[in-house]
Structure formats: C-alpha cells, structure tokens
Length: 275
Image (cartoon, rainbow, N blue to C red; front, side):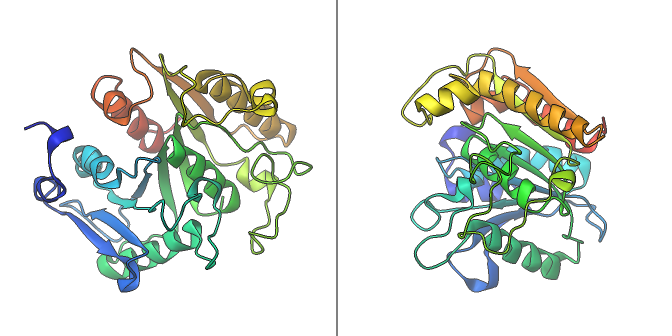
C-alpha cells in the first residue's frame, strides 16, 4: 500500500514516535509530533505547516526519516479551515482565535512534554503553509532560525506603507505585532517552486494588482519576492541568504515534490546544513 492510500491510523503506526495531540486538551489546537530516538533538550525543532488540503499528518510522516536522521523534533500543526479559515494571513476568526497564537500554545506544550527548548525553531510551509510561515516569520523573527517556503501563491513584501498582508503596514487584527524590518530581514529564507508550477488554478490568488506587482504564476512570484527581500536586506547592510530553487520535473503537489523533486533533502540542507 502506498503512502498516498494509507489511513491516518496506518500513517501514525508507520511513524512509530509520530503521535497526535491537542495543545492543552483544546480540540481547536491539534498537532502531530515526532520525537527522534536521540532526542535531547537542545535538539533542533522543525515545524512543518500544511497547505489548504490540511494534510498535516501526511506531511509529518513524509519528513519523519529526515527528522530522525537529523535528530530534530518535528511538529506539524493542523489548522482546520473551519476554525482557521484564513490561517495563511494570520487572521483570527470571529471568536478571536489566531493560528499564530495556537502555534505558540503548541510549542509551550511540546516543551513541557519533551523538555526540548522550543523558543527558537526552523520552519517549512507548503503552498498556503508557505504563506503562513513567511508572515509568521515576519511577525516573530526573533523566534525563527531559518525558513523554507515551498510554492506560496502570493507574498507579503517588506513595505510598511502597504497594509498587511500585501505589505507590513499595521492592522488592528494583529494589535500585538510590530514589524521590525532589520530583524525580519535577518532571517535566512529559501523558496522552492516546482518547474511546472505555472498553472493558474482555482486555488491560485489572482487580481490585476497581484499579477502586475508579483507575477502571473508561482515561479515568477517567488523570483520577484526573493529579489525584493535580498535588495531590502542589502539596504540595511545585511547579507542575509535568500535562496531560490526550482524543483525539476514537478508541479504544485506536495507528494510529487517530495517523491520526485527532492524537496525533503532541499529543505533539510538549507535549514540545517548552513549557507
């Protein structure tokens, strides 16, 4: 039976130390956790964030071998679209639930469960997860060591004159967030996009403004964002690494990128292998 057809129960069993939890017993804050066999208090922490398909378990299971080899703790939060319908933009719902604060609660619980320090971590996000990760990184740059974004649909640019989430202008929905350009421009980031990820399907955000400012497909938008971030960092005399890689022969599919495009190794090489 292939991984794509394995049930949730089979995936958890196959992952051995991969388990499902809810932070503080709150069903609105579920996550998957993998604890490597050589876990220690200073083990690195890797957070993987799913796209709109909410395939957090499959994503976690795919990264288990790499996490075990690296000896890093793996956390995969599950942001239900019913509760966190706009998690990609860090938006809260009508009850005030925010995905970034939910992740904070998850990190606190993981520290309590494992004794691993979770105050700083490495992040990865695919598609909508990549949108979440780079905006989370911008809001909390002091907590993110490095980040990899795989094929986000569109980006936030480091311009305080433009309202969030297109830019970094302050918004009432995130009253506790103050964007600090030098800090957020100091976090190394790699952007990965499939060679054939140029399809403008129903999940791809389009508008005249976005198409003109960011590009007409994910490849072009990634290239423009990386160039802009690098130029902005240089304006602050920062030599931050902004990496861009095309994954050969694949399109907009997490499984295809992992199985055929070498995405898993590319992610861990950037996050844990240095510049």
